[in-house]
Length: 261
Image 1: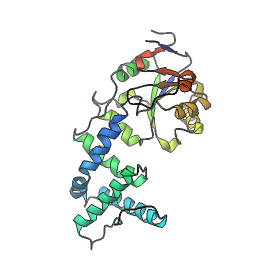
Image 2: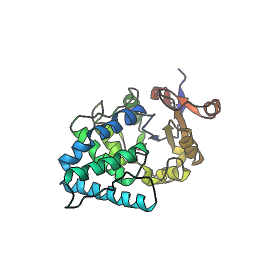
Image 3: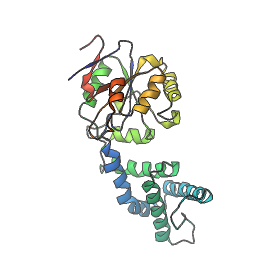
Image 4: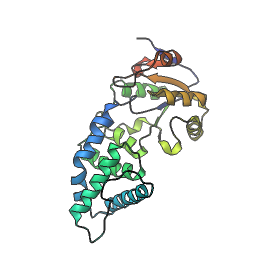
């Protein structure tokens, strides 16, 4: 298996999650089905709590916005008034959330409710974050050699911390120096990577970014980061052109630090 030598000036690893540290199927086959299966029970159990009321309020505002924009919407809009029968109101929220998920929407209202449900599921041990077996040993090795490790994912920072805090290998949060999400910018925009370098306090050339998505790789490269594309089972197939354009690895153990074994 070919190794790739990490340039000696690199002092920071920036890691994507889905398809890089974690199987791409984890979100699709574990996290999303959990929401669909437990949504109604979760709402019934937490309906009177402030956090849940706030989540429902955001969903209601989103539904009103969707109606204004003439977006296809479930027959009922979300309603949580004292006059509404609780079960009917819960059913309306369920319909709205399932509709948004089926349309693969990323609204703040949807992400907030999902985040709260996942937090409860992780804490109760119903879900454990999946991490490829080669990831933790590699990160420990990098850290022993004085490198810093950050995460950059389109999932919220809270969702990132849940995945690594309640992982199949236990609490891994101590392995990371920080987390970035799309609040810093979209992953396909080079400006985002410049901002990350600025926030970390290093030059872009000092960072090595690992991702499975070539559009992200290009954006990072345009910002002068070092880039390696990770090829894992279930990831999007790379074209011949992409394979020739980027260094690729199938496991983190292929990365050899400059000046160390």
